[in-house]
Image (cartoon, rainbow, N blue to C red; front, side, top):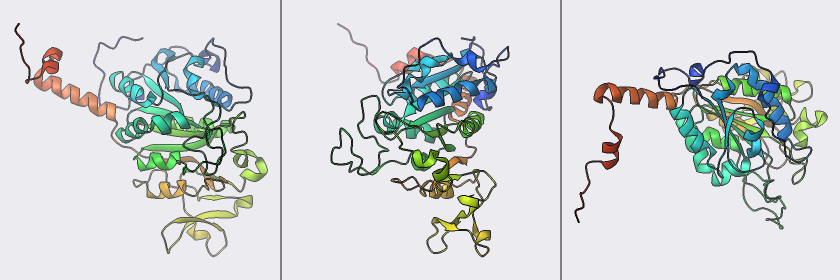
Length: 359
């Protein structure tokens, strides 16, 4: 790894501090020599190919890119990236990545996690990384099932889901990862689909450029234990009336011939989908991903029906600037050194309340 003895400048987005690659890169440069071991047909393959294909766009040295994962099928990701990586422990990837990003601002740090890993045992770690706005890029693979442990229901499984662990149907209301992230004050929140390479790459591009935590939920098919979970969003004929593609600055319209639109209900203030007419066309919302308040973004995230997935928004729901945790921490450390000189770690650990034991 590059020498980090010299002080890094503060007050800049971390990616500006990451050394650039010396030579032009290709997708092949980011493929490791490890055999990819997912089930044939798994959506993870599509995401891996998209990420490997996108990495050269960053123009960063491979040695300055790190992928950290937890436990699950998606968490094998670091093995297949020819970068630095860590296959960590269940649910703790955001915590480990936070320490890495905060202490090594010369690195581009990515977290790969799944709906079970991130939203069950890892829920607390995820929301605190989001609220702190650490410079991390979190890819949350959501297949609405536990795949690695052979098909139990997950925190995103729909009510009534029959699995090995819920033979009479799940009773739990599912998490909406995008809603959760917005509620945790995440500064960048997006959703995409594994099989839509162009859309997925576009969202990754925006996430990578964002200073702070970027959470990207990726709907991903598990063809063994939950095959076809997102078929309504992937089938060309069905998707036209089920997927709401969000573009900043554009009216929120979808459906055959852009016949449907999203408006605000004047009675309740909630958002709803209507058939667009000459009378209500002016009421169709224009998407503002940079709005300071997450209120409208949250309302958009609630449009999707958790059972049928109709009216599911994809794209960047929110992208706003907030102070970045690791930049602020570096500034505090610089200030402390300026005011107090070089610190004494032993004295700090001992503190003022200590004893001397004599025998």
